[in-house]
Length: 195
Image (cartoon, rainbow, N blue to C red; front, top):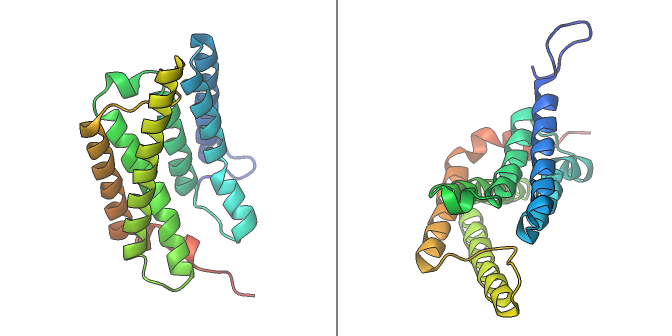
């Protein structure tokens, strides 16, 4: 149980984690401003928006996220924002981690939508994650090349062909994880309330 009952000494762990994640993203935003890093600032703003995704979906789609699902989505946003402050450059596996994490969030969304529509999610999850991964890599390359040409600091960085290939493989690993575990871990988002 994530929420404490009135009068009990246990804190709302989910609320504390959510606050910590939002604070972490805010710190990334502030640090991006301090460093004068447009990439860190823009990506922290995007992370704030992404961290609101569970709230938006709950209001508009009549679903209720489990506490761990909410934290999982929000953590994906935090790891990306933190990455822009150095881990993408300094920790070889950070990029793979964020791609797998983000791919499971996107793949999970596609999986849930497919199940709610009564269709098999397998092809849709793989195709959707692969397509978005390719589009992301293309956008990353265009933004990086254009920024360099204009003499600006890029908000996204392309590290070359090998990195792009590893990013796409990581995306597919995330998609496969969704196919293996999606029905068990996301069933509460598929079931519709009667009435």
